Image (cartoon, rainbow, N blue to C red):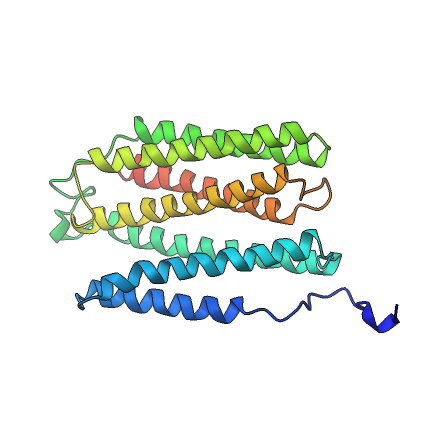
Length: 266
């Protein structure tokens, strides 16, 4: 074959893709329809689920192409892997700053409650959730899931495919149980998101953490499927590693939530 047919560099220059622009348009549609729905515009509620389906579809096809590039086309060279790892690290930093803003809002009211809050925290009339009931059980479940996914990772590195499959499967089960218990906690709570600063900060922080748990569960489920389909090897499993890093970040955020919001804040 002609020598010019081969890639002469290790960098991430792949074939043109329609998914970046398609994702941008889908996200713009989602945010616009969401704002219109919140402001009561007629028929905007019909556009919102369609926009959500568009976003999910663009994500699915984009990640499908990335999987093909890394698994079948050999585009994920060492230079590309370093770049992807850096991207995941910067993404997690941005997520950490997002939760920092949530904790900042919480402690702004909790450390110096105003007269309108009754000059106490939790405010008068709000019965906080007991940290040593369902929140403690959820803490144990989430920490256990961190152990099982670490076992899965180390098993994969050592070539123990069955151990890696079992560890990832147990992690996903624990994550789903955690999400179910979080829903139970919300359903039996004596206050809502409209109950002042306490309710807003509590549900904003724990709710977005729950959303991250759901995203992390999907992330790890895709990794489990790729592991089952022999896509991953002991020295090339970038997608699963990214999911594991994301999951450990979710664990750490929950520890801060448990200590500051559930235990100290109650």
